[in-house]
Length: 192
Image (cartoon, rainbow, N blue to C red; front, side):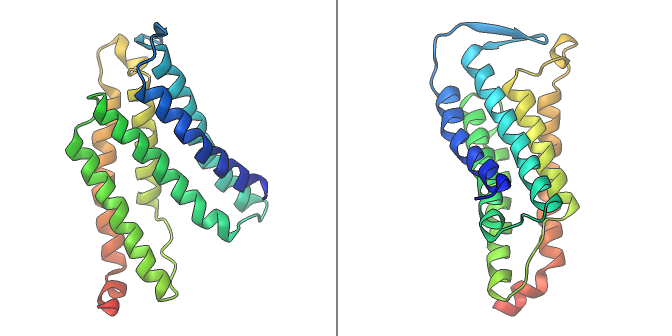
């Protein structure tokens, strides 16, 4: 179990902690954070989500830099990412911060691309993450972070940055999903 894989597992362990802190309405009061006034438990959940998002970048960076890429990491890293983002998006719907249909579109794309990767893997082909897919992931993470923290900094001037970032994430989700299928349509046709 190398360091990148440990970071991936840390992300997996942080997910239920994040969920409990965000889903349960603890009466710990509120905190003012860069112009936003949010419940303390939501703030702590936001910190945990941010730490988990950083481990998403760090584990991959370390694995590539130090040649520590493993099959376990190839499997668990994207799974941990999907679990973290899915948990956050579902809870943001519950909190009325993201429309349910937006989350359905985002999650549908994730399932579809994962299915495409499984079909490709069965054919011995690896469908690597493209630039648009990576951009989608990072915009999603930033949008979720800003929504969790009550739109910090931008709330001073009334700009709904977190919402705008989520709309951009939705557009990148649709674009990158279409791009994956357009670039790999032969795999689908071959498997029919």
